[in-house]
Length: 127
Image (tube, rainbow, N blue to C red):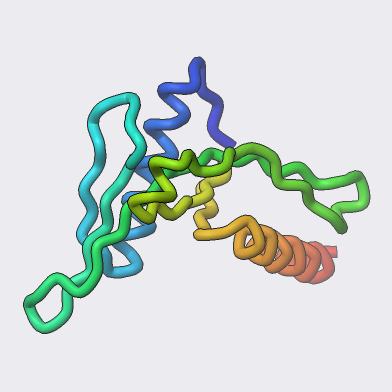
């Protein structure tokens, strides 16, 4: 888990993690250097030496909490897109403090479910 002194530092960290993840997915990535604005990251896909798709992203840092029996998780944070963001087709990227990335909260929940299952299997092998 990563600790931050302020929301600007945590937001900048989340954007860098998002950029790395998008590059792993094959995007060329451009980041907004302004601390404010409707678009945090621009991702460009190429095919046959041509731009095939341009995506605008808003990066949201999320908090993930597990209940005491480690069975359920709750994902907190993130806000709805503004009307201006919706009008230009901005998509959200959700980042957790341990660096898990997803395009939707449902995808994030599924990734954490997989992590919980993997953790349980590891615990059984050790014990």
